[in-house]
Length: 212
Image (cartoon, rainbow, N blue to C red):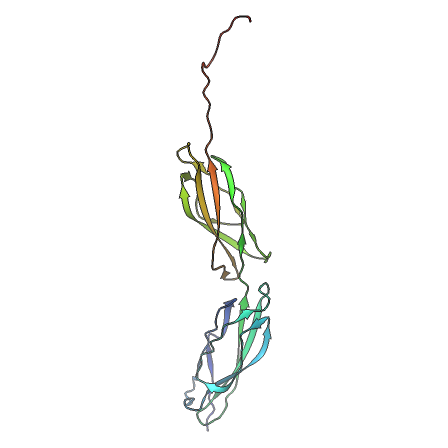
């Protein structure tokens, strides 16, 4: 009896903490793997992950397993060793598919109050100091403020002014942290309050007095 082969799509996978694998399995050489046939797999190695499980009885696939990091600050990895099994029980050569799982960063920043015409200095950091994290932001709300715009970087530095010059204004920034393709699901929102500047009028504008 002929031996089946196996093709995995994709041949490797990069996931974020809490996501599910989606590895489709097929037999390019056309040997029948229906009925009692299909694919089995074992776990060659599992690092810092839960949710990965072996499959001893042949199934059609795909490999769909939700993988969670044990330590959410470290990367995880699992390698699936997949074996094709024909309808009459003949096993073909195995292939390995490696899945890497990355941590999800979380941006931390604080509200700020400035005077109209001043520059913001909102520093952004990662809650657990995950190295390599990058940040981007959008303006989710603005009232009586000009100068706010979307951007990226570790500091929001923008000159903001109270539009009418008389009343307090606010800007809400939605910040997203990203690391190796993994981004926080719920944005970090901070508010910058912009206070208007007072002016002064002296009456009279000059004065002439006599001694005493």
